[in-house]
View 1: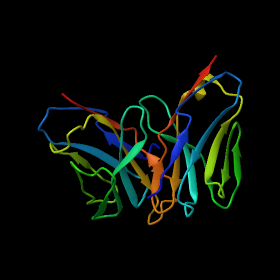
View 2: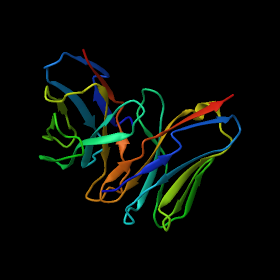
View 3: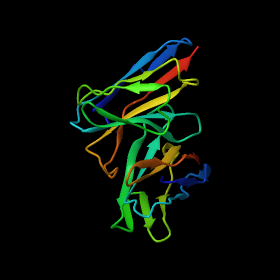
Length: 115
Length: 109
Protein backbone atom coordinates (compact mmCIF):
# COMPACT_ATOMS: atom_id res chain seq x y z
CA UNK A 1 0.00 0.00 0.00
CA UNK A 2 2.76 2.45 0.82
CA UNK A 3 3.87 2.30 -2.82
CA UNK A 4 0.89 4.31 -4.02
CA UNK A 5 0.55 7.91 -3.00
CA UNK A 6 -2.14 10.48 -3.70
CA UNK A 7 -2.10 14.20 -3.15
CA UNK A 8 -3.54 16.29 -1.82
CA UNK A 9 -5.46 14.50 0.93
CA UNK A 10 -8.14 17.21 0.96
CA UNK A 11 -9.01 19.53 -1.90
CA UNK A 12 -11.52 22.32 -2.12
CA UNK A 13 -12.71 23.64 -5.43
CA UNK A 14 -14.87 26.53 -6.43
CA UNK A 15 -17.54 25.92 -9.01
CA UNK A 16 -16.23 26.39 -12.54
CA UNK A 17 -12.64 25.47 -11.68
CA UNK A 18 -10.64 22.55 -12.97
CA UNK A 19 -8.57 20.67 -10.40
CA UNK A 20 -5.96 17.95 -10.79
CA UNK A 21 -5.50 15.04 -8.40
CA UNK A 22 -2.12 13.38 -8.26
CA UNK A 23 -1.44 9.63 -8.15
CA UNK A 24 2.05 8.13 -8.09
CA UNK A 25 3.19 4.54 -7.65
CA UNK A 26 6.62 2.97 -7.29
CA UNK A 27 5.43 -0.64 -7.54
CA UNK A 28 6.38 -0.95 -11.22
CA UNK A 29 2.74 -1.70 -12.00
CA UNK A 30 1.58 -1.37 -15.58
CA UNK A 31 -2.11 -0.77 -14.89
CA UNK A 32 -3.56 2.20 -13.01
CA UNK A 33 -7.13 3.14 -12.19
CA UNK A 34 -9.23 5.99 -10.87
CA UNK A 35 -12.37 5.35 -8.85
CA UNK A 36 -14.94 7.60 -7.33
CA UNK A 37 -16.58 6.72 -4.00
CA UNK A 38 -19.72 8.41 -2.72
CA UNK A 39 -21.07 7.96 0.81
CA UNK A 40 -22.59 4.54 1.33
CA UNK A 41 -21.73 3.42 -2.16
CA UNK A 42 -19.21 1.18 -3.82
CA UNK A 43 -16.41 2.13 -6.14
CA UNK A 44 -17.19 3.39 -9.61
CA UNK A 45 -14.52 3.33 -12.30
CA UNK A 46 -13.68 6.66 -13.94
CA UNK A 47 -10.67 5.85 -16.12
CA UNK A 48 -8.01 3.18 -16.36
CA UNK A 49 -4.70 2.82 -18.12
CA UNK A 50 -2.93 -0.36 -19.16
CA UNK A 51 0.26 1.22 -20.42
CA UNK A 52 1.97 4.56 -20.86
CA UNK A 53 0.25 6.92 -23.29
CA UNK A 54 -2.89 4.81 -23.34
CA UNK A 55 -6.05 5.04 -21.24
CA UNK A 56 -9.68 4.00 -21.46
CA UNK A 57 -12.94 5.41 -20.15
CA UNK A 58 -14.67 3.67 -17.31
CA UNK A 59 -18.31 3.82 -16.33
CA UNK A 60 -18.42 7.49 -15.29
CA UNK A 61 -15.78 9.28 -17.37
CA UNK A 62 -17.86 12.34 -18.27
CA UNK A 63 -16.40 15.51 -16.78
CA UNK A 64 -13.02 13.92 -16.07
CA UNK A 65 -9.76 13.63 -17.97
CA UNK A 66 -6.50 11.76 -17.40
CA UNK A 67 -3.00 11.42 -18.80
CA UNK A 68 -0.37 8.70 -18.57
CA UNK A 69 2.93 10.18 -19.67
CA UNK A 70 4.95 8.14 -17.21
CA UNK A 71 4.48 4.63 -15.89
CA UNK A 72 4.57 5.90 -12.31
CA UNK A 73 2.01 8.67 -12.67
CA UNK A 74 -1.68 8.84 -13.55
CA UNK A 75 -3.14 12.28 -12.72
CA UNK A 76 -6.88 12.89 -12.84
CA UNK A 77 -8.36 16.26 -13.77
CA UNK A 78 -11.86 17.05 -12.57
CA UNK A 79 -13.21 19.58 -15.02
CA UNK A 80 -15.95 22.16 -14.61
CA UNK A 81 -18.13 19.90 -16.75
CA UNK A 82 -18.41 17.42 -13.88
CA UNK A 83 -21.72 18.43 -12.33
CA UNK A 84 -21.35 16.81 -8.94
CA UNK A 85 -17.67 16.33 -8.18
CA UNK A 86 -17.79 16.24 -4.40
CA UNK A 87 -16.59 12.74 -3.52
CA UNK A 88 -13.71 10.61 -2.29
CA UNK A 89 -11.35 9.73 -5.14
CA UNK A 90 -9.23 6.60 -5.04
CA UNK A 91 -6.36 5.67 -7.28
CA UNK A 92 -5.28 2.06 -7.64
CA UNK A 93 -2.68 0.04 -9.51
CA UNK A 94 -2.13 -3.58 -10.47
CA UNK A 95 0.56 -5.55 -12.20
CA UNK A 96 -1.11 -5.83 -15.57
CA UNK A 97 -4.26 -6.07 -17.59
CA UNK A 98 -5.85 -7.23 -19.97
CA UNK A 99 -7.85 -9.44 -17.67
CA UNK A 100 -8.74 -7.93 -14.32
CA UNK A 101 -7.48 -10.84 -12.30
CA UNK A 102 -4.59 -9.05 -10.68
CA UNK A 103 -4.93 -7.59 -7.23
CA UNK A 104 -5.53 -3.87 -7.19
CA UNK A 105 -3.74 -1.85 -4.52
CA UNK A 106 -5.22 1.47 -3.49
CA UNK A 107 -3.79 4.84 -2.62
CA UNK A 108 -4.94 6.77 0.49
CA UNK A 109 -7.49 8.81 -1.43
CA UNK A 110 -8.28 12.47 -2.04
CA UNK A 111 -11.44 14.01 -0.64
CA UNK A 112 -12.69 16.68 -3.04
CA UNK A 113 -15.26 19.22 -1.91
CA UNK A 114 -16.88 21.79 -4.15
CA UNK A 115 -17.64 25.05 -2.37
CA UNK B 1 -21.26 -6.24 -18.05
CA UNK B 2 -20.71 -7.91 -14.71
CA UNK B 3 -23.31 -7.24 -12.02
CA UNK B 4 -22.20 -7.66 -8.40
CA UNK B 5 -24.67 -7.65 -5.53
CA UNK B 6 -23.54 -7.59 -1.92
CA UNK B 7 -25.64 -8.36 1.17
CA UNK B 8 -26.32 -7.25 3.78
CA UNK B 9 -25.63 -3.53 3.50
CA UNK B 10 -25.23 -3.27 7.28
CA UNK B 11 -24.39 -5.92 9.84
CA UNK B 12 -24.14 -5.61 13.59
CA UNK B 13 -22.75 -8.43 15.76
CA UNK B 14 -21.60 -8.92 19.32
CA UNK B 15 -17.90 -9.29 19.94
CA UNK B 16 -16.95 -12.93 19.62
CA UNK B 17 -19.76 -13.79 17.22
CA UNK B 18 -19.26 -14.65 13.55
CA UNK B 19 -20.09 -12.39 10.62
CA UNK B 20 -20.93 -13.49 7.09
CA UNK B 21 -21.18 -11.28 4.02
CA UNK B 22 -22.32 -12.62 0.67
CA UNK B 23 -21.80 -11.47 -2.89
CA UNK B 24 -23.40 -12.73 -6.06
CA UNK B 25 -22.23 -12.11 -9.61
CA UNK B 26 -23.56 -12.66 -13.08
CA UNK B 27 -20.65 -13.45 -15.42
CA UNK B 28 -19.70 -17.11 -15.27
CA UNK B 29 -16.32 -16.27 -16.84
CA UNK B 30 -15.27 -14.29 -13.75
CA UNK B 31 -12.37 -15.94 -11.99
CA UNK B 32 -10.95 -13.66 -9.30
CA UNK B 33 -12.74 -12.68 -6.11
CA UNK B 34 -11.02 -10.32 -3.65
CA UNK B 35 -12.37 -8.84 -0.44
CA UNK B 36 -11.36 -5.40 0.81
CA UNK B 37 -11.70 -3.76 4.21
CA UNK B 38 -12.07 0.01 4.38
CA UNK B 39 -11.92 1.94 7.62
CA UNK B 40 -13.48 5.38 7.76
CA UNK B 41 -11.64 7.83 5.53
CA UNK B 42 -8.95 5.30 4.66
CA UNK B 43 -8.01 3.32 1.59
CA UNK B 44 -9.52 -0.12 0.88
CA UNK B 45 -7.10 -2.82 1.93
CA UNK B 46 -7.09 -6.35 0.53
CA UNK B 47 -7.81 -8.85 3.29
CA UNK B 48 -8.27 -12.08 1.36
CA UNK B 49 -8.86 -13.25 -2.18
CA UNK B 50 -9.74 -16.45 -3.98
CA UNK B 51 -9.43 -17.68 -7.52
CA UNK B 52 -11.89 -19.86 -9.37
CA UNK B 53 -9.88 -23.06 -9.08
CA UNK B 54 -10.31 -23.05 -5.29
CA UNK B 55 -13.49 -23.47 -3.26
CA UNK B 56 -12.32 -22.12 0.09
CA UNK B 57 -9.44 -20.16 1.53
CA UNK B 58 -8.64 -19.31 5.14
CA UNK B 59 -6.37 -16.82 6.83
CA UNK B 60 -6.61 -16.96 10.62
CA UNK B 61 -10.08 -15.62 11.52
CA UNK B 62 -11.04 -14.81 7.94
CA UNK B 63 -12.25 -17.21 5.28
CA UNK B 64 -13.77 -16.93 1.84
CA UNK B 65 -15.91 -19.59 0.18
CA UNK B 66 -16.75 -19.71 -3.51
CA UNK B 67 -19.60 -21.49 -5.26
CA UNK B 68 -18.97 -21.10 -8.96
CA UNK B 69 -22.05 -23.05 -9.96
CA UNK B 70 -24.33 -20.74 -8.03
CA UNK B 71 -22.13 -17.70 -8.75
CA UNK B 72 -21.76 -16.50 -5.22
CA UNK B 73 -18.97 -16.14 -2.70
CA UNK B 74 -18.91 -15.23 0.96
CA UNK B 75 -16.63 -13.67 3.54
CA UNK B 76 -16.63 -15.28 6.97
CA UNK B 77 -15.13 -13.58 10.00
CA UNK B 78 -15.01 -15.63 13.19
CA UNK B 79 -14.45 -14.45 16.76
CA UNK B 80 -15.14 -10.87 15.74
CA UNK B 81 -13.38 -8.04 17.54
CA UNK B 82 -14.23 -4.31 17.73
CA UNK B 83 -11.33 -3.55 15.37
CA UNK B 84 -13.09 -5.60 12.70
CA UNK B 85 -15.64 -2.76 12.47
CA UNK B 86 -15.32 -1.28 8.96
CA UNK B 87 -16.89 -1.36 5.52
CA UNK B 88 -16.16 -4.53 3.58
CA UNK B 89 -16.27 -4.67 -0.22
CA UNK B 90 -16.30 -7.67 -2.45
CA UNK B 91 -15.03 -7.47 -6.00
CA UNK B 92 -15.24 -9.71 -9.04
CA UNK B 93 -12.47 -9.86 -11.62
CA UNK B 94 -12.66 -11.16 -15.12
CA UNK B 95 -12.87 -8.98 -18.18
CA UNK B 96 -12.99 -6.10 -15.78
CA UNK B 97 -13.14 -5.57 -12.02
CA UNK B 98 -16.51 -4.79 -10.44
CA UNK B 99 -17.10 -3.89 -6.81
CA UNK B 100 -20.03 -4.58 -4.55
CA UNK B 101 -21.74 -1.67 -2.79
CA UNK B 102 -20.19 -2.56 0.56
CA UNK B 103 -21.27 -3.88 3.96
CA UNK B 104 -20.88 -1.77 7.07
CA UNK B 105 -19.91 -4.17 9.87
CA UNK B 106 -20.21 -3.03 13.46
CA UNK B 107 -18.83 -5.23 16.23
CA UNK B 108 -20.26 -4.30 19.62
CA UNK B 109 -18.02 -4.86 22.64
